[in-house]
Length: 87
Image (spheres, rainbow, N blue to C red):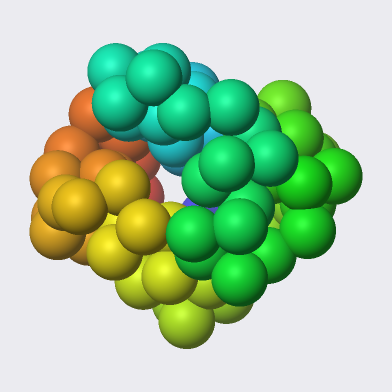
C-alpha cells in the first residue's frame, strides 16, 4: 500500500501531465489562455493554474475545457499516462 506522500507525488505528476495536455491542445488551436477561458466560461488565471498543474479540476471543468477545445474528454486526457503501480 502506498503512503500519503507517494499519493501526493503521483497526484502532482498527474496534474502536471493534465496541464501539459490542456496547453498542447490549446496551442494547437491557436488559442490564448484568455481565449480558452472565455470559450470554457472560466477565468484566465484558472486556465494558467491548470496548465501548471497547480489546481485539481472537477469533472465538470474538464468537460467545459474539452468542449471549448472541440475535442472529447478522452482525447484531452489521452496523453496523461495512467498510474500502473497500484497494488
